[in-house]
Length: 211
Image (cartoon, rainbow, N blue to C red):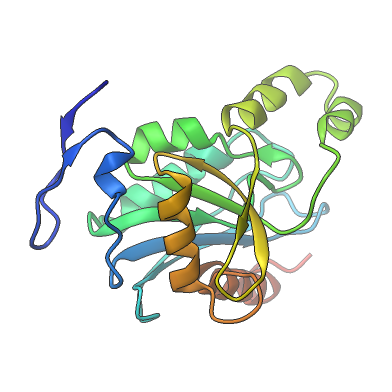
């Protein structure tokens, strides 16, 4: 087992394995909620990241533009996170890994780069996307599918409000993932950081990047 010493976080030190570090989720801890808006006719998508506390206060904002149909979404999100310069962010909360017309987010690479847990949230069961990736991207479908597989198996999580979501996660156990989701889901199934990011991304795209 790899044991590492976690950075100073406000008023505590935590020691343990990478997943054990985040075994005590603080109610006021911050996440970076990430969601997008795009059209297949766009050259790039508009991806917004919102820094939100557990009390639902917003105190940060980031923006990046992955290529529609490209392979750069992971790098773009890493750059957005680094530009925020916010070591107090405790987890990334993504509105899915298949964004910007199959520009797959590599969850493992993202986690390795930022060093904090990464949770991808989706809402419906699916038969899989491999057949679509093979059809639309025959030249590099193996690369894209490898990124999908590195995100691990999707797991269903039942929330305290009797709703359920599906998650892929790296760097956090499923119990703490449920704690995070229950903190940020106010009604329905969509966590507030993702919902707000999606709303802002839609407005920015229409206002500044019209097709």
